[in-house]
Image (tube, one colour):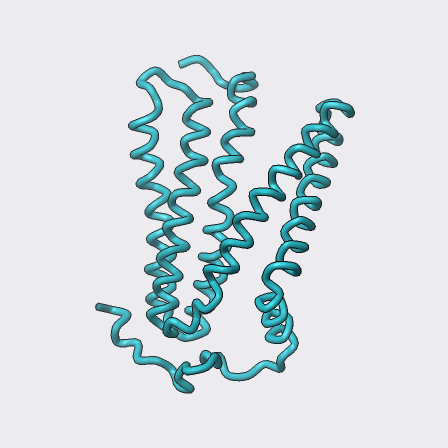
Length: 210
């Protein structure tokens, strides 16, 4: 098998591979945050099982997608892109699993406002990523493709994308931003849910093993 070290095709595949991995970052963030919430509610079994669903999904998607989309002839560049997509598919599955687990553990009130916030984040995230990518490419086209220029252009594009998303949240989803700030400033207290209609005591965890 020929070596792929320094292959121009492999290097050029990094950009689409990272692009396909991008949606998975959203899923990973949800898994990370919601699993911590489940641990705080002492629903460790639900946290572990729902997180495992995501990682198993990554492995299964990698096998299925590479089998279906990568030809029998070794194609490292296409394999890299397919693995990026598999990572996103598994992490988004894990995000859905942890959200279902949180609803089961804490009730439907735990997911209030999720649809609105998700819509704002996804739509403005795509816009911010597109603007950041455009700025990064524009800077690189003028400054060259050295490592210093690449790091600087990438950092600038990332900051610009973050600013776009933050501004959109402040304009379109102020309620969530205000709630997060208020909760962050509130003194530490019980870890049980405190939203309207939630129980004041730990939920029955016997259903975790069903």
